[in-house]
Length: 50
Image 1 (spheres, one colour):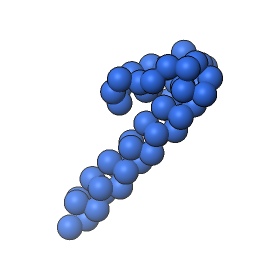
Image 2 (cartoon, rainbow, N blue to C red; image 1 turned 90 degrees about the vertical axis):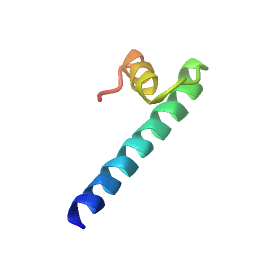
Image 3 (cartoon, rainbow, N blue to C red; image 1 turned 135 degrees about the horizontal axis):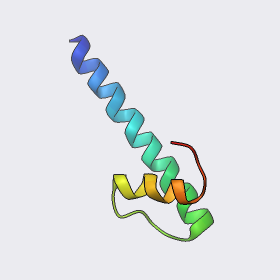
Image 4 (cartoon, helix red, strand yellow; image 1 turned 180 degrees about the vertical axis):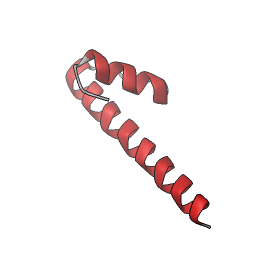
């Protein structure tokens, strides 16, 4: 049960990070991330720490 709760928390945390990355990327670069990984790449291009 604890494992499932931790997995759910980590999943939600990653989803939130991707949402933030995508929002900032669209606002600053005018580009939309194609997937989770590219959202972090775009954030790095903007100088955000990961």
